[in-house]
Image (cartoon, rainbow, N blue to C red; front, side):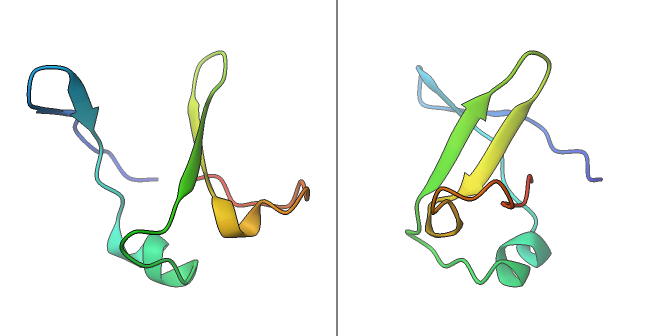
Length: 60
């Protein structure tokens, strides 16, 4: 687990950076798309290329 800060980008968007080791372990590159899903008490980020209808995607 890693702790990240929420950063304000402009006046209407926020950003959270992802650790490089997560990105490289999932073979993601700049520009790749991710699915962001808000659940009851958490936010789940799923690499789009791994979401082929499978439940075995890695939560970041």
